[in-house]
Image 1 (cartoon, rainbow, N blue to C red):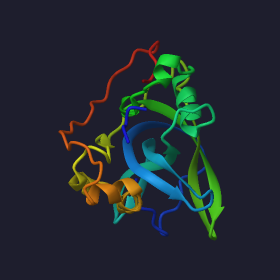
Image 2 (image 1 turned 180 degrees about the vertical axis):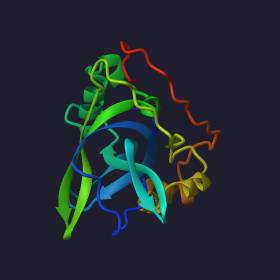
Image 3 (image 1 turned 90 degrees about the horizontal axis):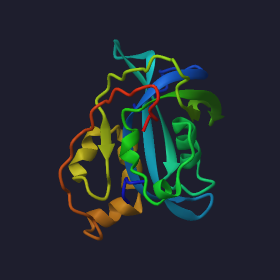
Length: 208
């Protein structure tokens, strides 16, 4: 799957409080074709990961930046959640030309506002991304501290997976795309990888 279109949760870590937060997208991970047991179908998925600015969590006695992620079907179809959130994030609908091939890598390093809600599952409370929006005009743009991370399952060396959180690695390994690559079926050129740089944007510019 082309990309042209984080921490492992622990019971001891309280979920991020519900609310709205400034954030910066630092991670984009292609997790391949994932099977959905509920709907009995398979579709390409990506995970977006944000650093929640100004929020920290203590792990092993060390304060680290809070992160939160969301999984999307890699589609810009009319009803796709990814298209909805990207358009709200941009503050502008996609043009027909963009819908023909939008480079998802351009969102890495882009600031936004995240709406976080709490949902119960299996007797536990989880913090979930419920909405993404463009920063209000005049609001100071947040700056991330975490190094950008992009992983393309089609083309990147599989060894690069080792830098990803374990729970994401496990999701990748369950994908049909990963199984085909390991079997030597349909994998692309490993190529080279270069992390994008954060970009300072003029207030009149779209975030990506």
